[in-house]
Length: 247
Image (tube, rainbow, N blue to C red; front, side, top):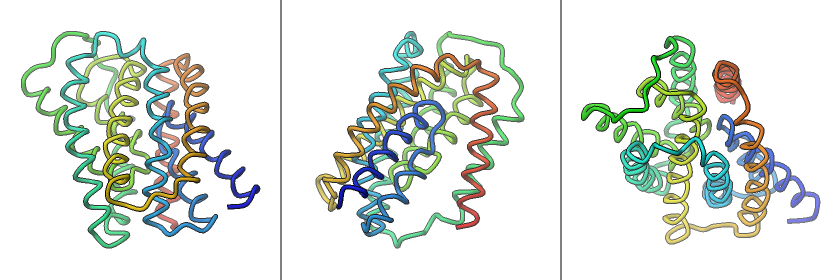
């Protein structure tokens, strides 16, 4: 990797870290850049996941105030994310490339529809019912599988699902989304480090730049009003779906 390529990876990681903290879909910047500098698709995907883990952790830390009082949600959603990430990572390493490509844009558009259609809920910080606990576990698993496998716009899909399931402010759910996405990426990264080939030079550049980008994204993203955040998520999701359809 020459200096110009390294700078491109750094810039993509910084931008992706900020985008992931606020919305999600930062991988649509970093993954193509890794392909452009010469990495094979699976190596690029694996290295991208490993490199963005620290950015995910940074984003979750930036939203730590919004995570207060969400221990129960973190337990159930995080457990699902762990199991899903392992499943998704195994699928990435065993299935042919591009198995889910046709389905991904549809999933993203469905998530956008959920963000638009569901009315503003009556806010509640109380304990989840038994059925909602199981549903949160299932959501964590399903999105974890997707995140472990590919993860483009993972945050958009996860935030829409959480908003549909839990009555709370969108910014608090965004903090939960960041933590669950961080768990997914972290678990998948551990799996990839053990059994897959990681391009450590690229992963290190992404790790440093995404960590900084996520802190800046969290700092300013937390100030965005819920309604504005909702439409930002919808707009980004639609753009991502169009890009994937065109590809």
